[in-house]
Amino acid sequence: NAEAAWDVTPGSAAIVVAVIDTGVRPDHPDLVGKLLPGYDFVSEDGPGDFTTANDGNGRDSDPSDPGDWISAGENASGPLAGCGVSPSSWHGTQTAGLTGAATNNGVGMASVGRNVRVLPIRALGKCGGFLSDVVAAMRWAAGLSNDPVQNQNPARVINLSLGSSGACASSMYESAVAEILAAGVTIVAAAGNENGLAAGKPANCPGVIGVAGLRHSGTKVGYSNVGPELSIAAPAGNCVNLSGQCLFPLLTTTNTGLTTPAANTYSDGSDASLGTSFSSPLAAGAAGLMLSINSALTPAQIRRGLMGTARAFPTTGATSGTASCQPPSSTEQDECYCTTTTCGAGMMNTSGAVTAAAGLKAWATPASVQMASGSTTVISSAESWALPPNQIQTRTWSADPGGVPVTLTPSADGSTVTVTGTTDGTAVIRLTISDGAGPTAAATTTITISSSVSKGDGGGGGATSLTWLLGLLLAAAGLRRCDR
Image 1: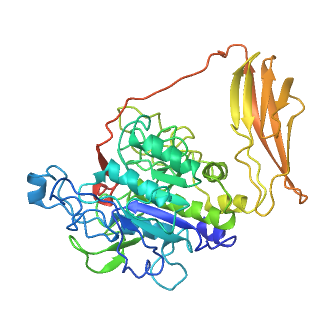
Image 2: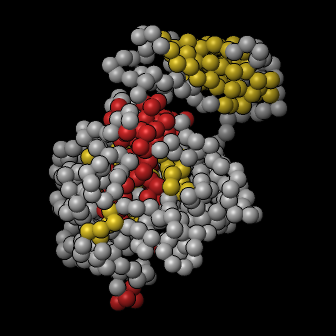
Image 3: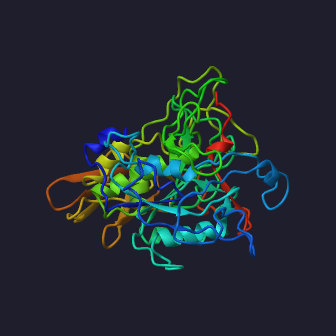
């Protein structure tokens, strides 16, 4: 629903979206004039060995993509053994096009972000990349690092169509993500393409907008990973047919070169763009549009805006026998009906998110909560916003009539309220905000109070992961199979 969003804003060239990937082809006609000066963060494998970099050097100021093909010889032995024989993916060029290709210019395609600018950063090469390179690129993109040079165009949004398996906790991603979000930079990441297994990092990191992949019918595409940490779902491309041209691919900017660059072109049914790698830049473009209309939005507000305006997942219309998606386990799951605990809050609605960003919006978080009788819970208004130059002037908390009695204790500035309940039942807590210009906006949290709920705090954790593992590239080349 991007076209309706453009009626609110076509995007602003002042908003920068960083695409950390394999680099881009800067001469592509739909990217010329849209790219800012980026950087190449692909480091050498070891002394004198630039196999992964594939450009004859380590880090430099040229983020163009030289190609990431793997030959039969490279796959058989040496540093790239076992990576799999494949042509160059032009992966970064594809993701950049979906986020910010020139639009309404009579050439090629449209992008979701339309007028936003793209900051191309190369962190992946042959067979993927190193986590240390990706994290260095993330910090530089956000303007938090001047190593090796100062970034003159810090990004407001970072797209990561990459990742690896495992929990975010105790990984290099954890602290980098927290630092970047605190600096006001939104991070969007692909869920992963392991046929319904657990969403990988960084998509599963707290505060990241993790994006699952949908088929044309709105069900989970077979290859997309799932998980409760994901925020939203967006089109990922699928084929349906087992032979012939892919029927439902995404269309984006790419290159015809099987190894080194050749003619610039667009993906299609014969050279299909399929993967959550391509769901993610659609959401990054939507985030760019939201910031174009309201540059004061925080990463938490952008995430809430995308989630809170999403369309409900379909529950019918799939092939016979399709079941609801299940929580991730060691068992793969193909096409399934998404739920809000497996694929995010719903199907991304770019127009709804941008429309919300363009006005006064109240969010009471969490939207629902269970609490033990006699205990307390805290509801926050921190994700609410007003369109600048207006600011939220008042925050009022109340309990809707008809619910069980509760006690409300607002904080001094009204940004949060502590709710105490002693009677089993349901209460609806209402937040009303005003920007002083006349209109008000409201949101509610539904609280279920039960004496059977434990008062103890929950906990959680996950297995630690090695910080120098090879980053797993979510490339179209690995998704050639048609998804039913």
